[in-house]
Length: 71
Image 1 (spheres, rainbow, N blue to C red):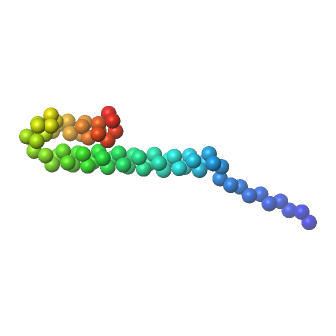
Image 2: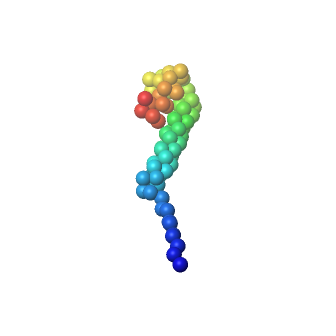
């Protein structure tokens, strides 16, 4: 009697692609946390403290984006 046994394994390309997706999500969440923390900390400063740093209240989100995302 003959039979066929076919076992499939995940290809390395697929597993590395899935790993890459999770890494991208992790990096995005970390950057978002930096952005949120920076906005929160800068919003906690007085206008005088912001002026000493050369930051206007209107530009807080821009400064946070620069800190978190580099733009």
